[in-house]
Structures are given as structure tokens and as C-alpha cells.
Amino acid sequence: MSFCHPEILFEKLIKPSSPTPDHLKIFKLSFLDQLPPPLYQTLLYYYRTDDYEKSINPSEFSKRLQESLSLLLTRFYPLAGRISRTESVIDSINCQDQGVQYRETRLDCQIKEFLREAYEDINLLTLLAPRKIIEDVDDLVLAPLVGVQVSNFSCGALVLAVQILHIVADGFTAFTFTSEWAKISKFEMMSKLSNSVNFDEVGSILPTIDISRKIKPFSPHGPEVKTVTKRFMFDEATISRLKDEVMITNSSSFLERQPTKVEVVTAFIWRSLIHAAQARHGYLRPSLTSLSENLRGKKTAIEFPQNAFGNVYIPVLIKFMPDDSSKMGLHDFVFLIRDAIKKTMLDLDKAKSKEDLYSIAIGAHNEMREWSSNDKVDARFAAILSSFPLYDEADFGWGKPFWVSTGRLLPQTFMLVDTAMGKGIEAWVNVDEIEMLKLQSDSSMAALISQF
Image: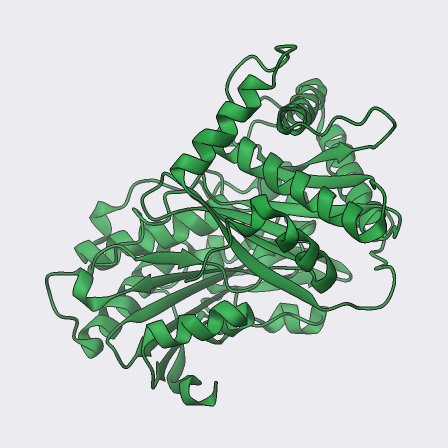
């Protein structure tokens, strides 16, 4: 699609509008920040100029974005710094106001044309984001923690990409950063911001440790395979039907309440992936999926503030172990999800020290790696973004986006995002080519495949 390849107009580093005070120059990372992979979380916000009553002057818009980002970085000062390490331990952020990456590009095509091509090759969406995969630790300590790209289309539409390095931020922190940026841009003043993030360092109470001998190495099994990402649309009616199916078949009444939309969609996708693997291999295989449990405000050995900055979550591992009496009802998978979350929360409730939290988190990450390295089982990892009002909180002064997407998924993952109206869920699913064909041959999944 060379006719629509982005042309870089300019690129620069945006720095905080006020220098970071000396006593804040070193921001300690926490043990929980050591566990995520060194990748960028990417969200793309799509805007049409005809959705807003005012025409957008590109130069004024660019100026407003840059100025508001600079103002925001005075509050989110760690994100303008760089990763620092002591010997082999990544332990802090050096907050010398090095700045975040900001890029503007132009594409000589209409956004409808671009998205039509992206439907056939979803990896094209990566053209709309500035940062790529980090290859090694040397790159990590030099890389900006945030990357921003504004892509201008010939039709007047634009896409805003916001990327934040996962090592320093989880979904809550990344969402809050973008939400607060939008408020400053829209109202053109800092006074509209709430005290949305607590920068009392989680790293001071849950410090980094040398995990090199505690975390098992990741050993992918078999030859590298090509993976495919497809988007499946669960509208309000579909979700309602799935909820009814769960409760009707819940004959033993071990589910006390109707599933949430996240529970039922996660259960449906996971079960469909298990069926796809069964069709490929000829037998039911053990399968694991994982969710992230936010620890903010939860009862644990350490009480994390509701708005703590950084990575403040723990993986919840959910397992399907087939046997002669394997139950494959949708309600069975909802039960597996709820039961795993309940057990994880009980373990956290029993934790009496930070060492207990270390042990729980390390155990979960090691088990995830063991499953990923075993060719006799399947590991699918879930990212749930539907709890964040991505559309409502992304009005930078020219209206809400008409769509929000990711840029690229890691292999064997699926991501759930609310639809624009908030009633449905978009599910992005990445598996290898063979399993995607099996997944698409499932009539219940094929009916949900969505074009842009």
C-alpha cells in the first residue's frame, strides 16, 4: 500500500513545561514494574473532522497538542525520563526531563481506504504509531517512555497514537495519562485536572529485587509461526443472548448472578479457541488464559492507593484441564473464570508481607512461562480494556473519536475493548494461521467477524 505510506512531517522531543525538582529526579520502580515485557502499550484514537462543529486548523491543533502535552508532563514527570539500572536490575527512572517522542505524519489517502487495507492486514495499523519493539536492555535505557504520533489523512481525518512503555505503566496509568492530556488540551488549562494519580512511590514499599534467578526464562517451543489478528464484534444483542445462554444452562445454580459482559465474552472466546485447537490436533488440550487483577484499593499485605502510578496488578491464571467428563458449557467457563479470581483474591488476602506478594507474583509469571514453553498445552493471554471509558475521555477539543483500536497484538493473545456506544465489545484475537482458519470455520465465531 505504497500510495498510503506515511510521510514524516517532523519529529521532536516534548519536555515538561517546568523543570522537575531536584528531589524528584530519581523515581523508584517497584517489583511489579520488573515483570511486564519491554513493549509499548499502544492505543490509536481515530477522529473525523466532520464530527465536530468547528473545522480543525492543523497547525493550531498541533500547537495545542504539543503545549498541553508539555504541561501534562510536569505532573507525569516520570514519563519524561529514561529507564535506569543498577548492574542487571532495572530499578528506577532517571527524571532529567529528557522528553517524550512526538511525531506528525501525512498520508495521501482517505482514512476509509487505509482501514479497508488494514482489514486485510491489521499490521498496517503499526504505521500509525512511532515506537517499535525494543530488542535489548541497551535500547531500553535509551528509549523514550512515551511515543506520540499524529497521522493526518487527505480527507481531513486524523489518528492520534499514544504509546507508553509497559515497564512503567499498566492500563490504569496509561489510560489516566491520556485522559488528563485530553482535559488540558480541551480546556487549555491545568486547573481542570483532578488528583488522578498518586506518585507516592510504590517502589519504596515494594522495592525491586534481582529476579534473574527467580523468573524462569521464556523458551518458545517449535518453529516460529505466522500469526494472524482478526476483529470480532459482540454487539449488545449478542452479549445479551450469551448471558441468557449461561443462566439457562446453569442448572446446578453454581453461578449466583448473571455474568458481566467481560466474563461472558472472555468465556466465549476462550472456549472457541479451545475448540479451534481441538479441531487442529484432534483432541481436547489443556488450556490456560490469564486476566490482570488490579491491586489498587484491594486487601493485601500492602495497601496500594486507588490511583497509584505504575504497574499495580497481578496475573490471574485460569485453567481448563480436559478429562472424560469435560464440561464445555459456556457457564462452565464463566465458573472457571470466577473461581480463579476468587482463589487469587483469597491468596492475596492471606498475604502478610511483601515477600508473600513477591512469591505470589513470581509463581504466576513462572507458571505462565511454563505453559507458553510447553507444546502439549495452549496458553492464551487476555488484555481487558473495556473497564476504561476510552471514548468518553479522549476528547482533545475536537470531539470524541469514532473508533479506538490497538496497533498490534502479541501472539496468542486477545484483547477486549468497548465499542463506541459502550454497549458492545470488540475482541481482537491473535493466533497462528492454522488455528485462525479453524476459529473462522466455527459458525458462531464467523458470524462475529467485523470489517472496519
